[in-house]
Image 1 (cartoon, each protein chain N blue to C red):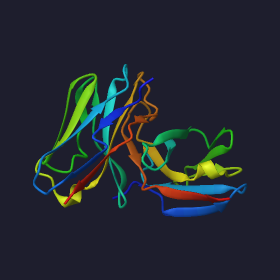
Image 2 (tube, each protein chain N blue to C red):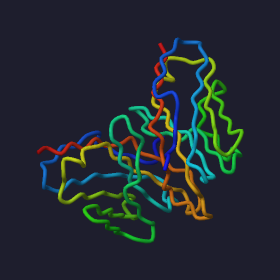
Image 3 (cartoon, each protein chain N blue to C red):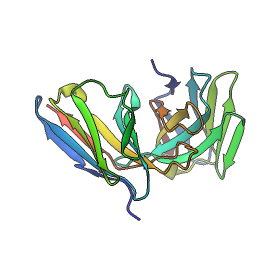
Length: 116
Length: 113
């Protein structure tokens, strides 16, 4: 079975450029999460969707960040314009919420972003 | 402000001995706690969890202990094996049924053969 698929795995870009990260959740999962991993803050939740609807975006750092989930099998995280401090590993995760969320998320392999 | 804290960035343990990873939290409303394990260039994977109504949960070599009065939980791995070398993240759920996980900063565990 395919897990959560993220692309690109690595992205190197220059400050000011637009970055788009992509995620395909596990088929049948109805919740999708975007996390960012940094040394200082560990794994931070940026936003999560349930049934394609954004539920909590309080972790999105600022207006430069936006996320969409146009359908159940695809989501994007966009940074425009990108800044060096956005350099991090971005993880997408999905889960099947059966009315009793247990925190058992399935993570993709991550997208490592470097902004020069 | 970090609501879930892992104060030890790294830990080295001899193979066969016990590994103890610690985690502290500040929000007494957290209802459910989890440990995730992460290998390099991979995403975190779920390891073990515990509900706030329990003080211990065991799964094979892994045991999680919860001390609610101290707002502290720990993960014990016995015996430690080389394949356990990874980064371990502690995480907490605000209430059962909510999927907003709050993670700590992680502890890198190295098992020395």
